[in-house]
Image 1 (cartoon, rainbow, N blue to C red):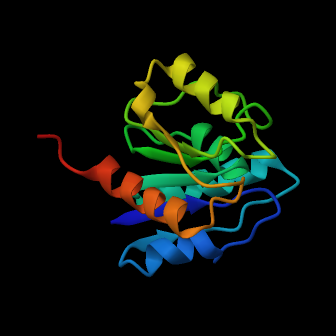
Image 2: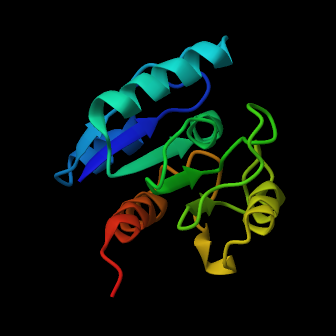
Image 3: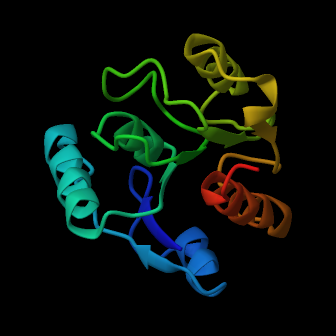
Length: 157
């Protein structure tokens, strides 16, 4: 599976989450997104999306907001504690989007993801509660991220 991984604010390519996905046999495209200029970050993400045509887009925190604000067509999104209220203008996501978030997130309120699910008309099970903080960097949320990516591209029965 080809994954476009959009990192969070003040994060860098090659972090724990994209490395976790790559170490499980997936091709991960992980561009550096501009921290200060959202327009540049969106342009980079859109260019990489067009160049690689990924099977799924994963966005972490600010990267989740970036994922929501690019033109991804029907490519599934997996959003990790998406910071959609802070960056960009999108207030909904496409059908099939999965959101992973911790109720203990000290940066982005869990309620923001609940609101995004409601705004988008998604079933409650598309919001996956996992992890003990904003980073979602422990073994259980990493595994849940992998499972969400795989489920997003699995053919419908």
